[in-house]
Length: 240
Image (cartoon, rainbow, N blue to C red; front, top):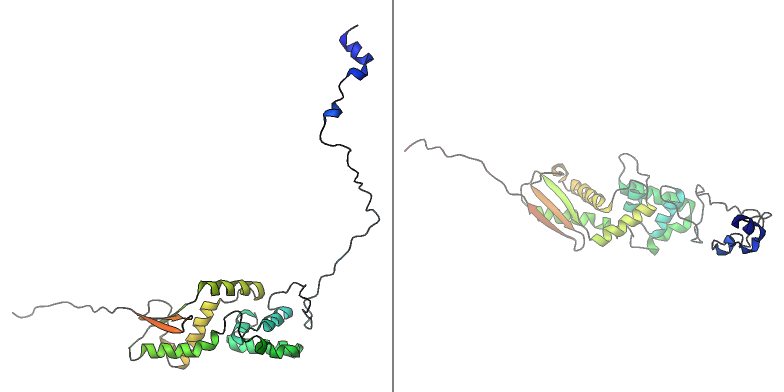
């Protein structure tokens, strides 16, 4: 009798390879048919198109402007009219940020009268920290700093703390409309508009200035960087 025939006659002597398996095949008690009778729960999403939607629970995700609920949240935060117009996404052609912000606030108060005192309850704007209210003062400081200097090309700049710009950038991207202007450029634009009212608007440029007026918003001061003037000439000795 050969070895093969002996192994067939004695099956108990064969090694059971399944006893060495550690994958755990067939060892689970989970059944695919246990939840057969249960129905999936469907959660309805809130409709943000309703203008009278209240965000009192704080559990809903607040949409960004210019959706009605997003504009209402901007008013609730205590945003100033300049920032409402700047990040609200409702500004029309030829309209200033202030004018657009006034319209947005009026429309929100019309739908919810409780928002009328939101600015009084939160007097500090979370986006600009009321810097736009200082624009007329900054324009006056620039005018006084220039004084009697003859300037045909004036450029404006602003120095804003990094933490303030980062915080404003985060809030603007979270709650503001897409493509909204940042704080720095909007503040410079507002100061330039105030300078136009003072008679300096025709001299404002964006490159190659004769005088650069740098605004420090932390101390509300203005530093002038005056560009040097060079006179070209040549010497000609016509007589001895």
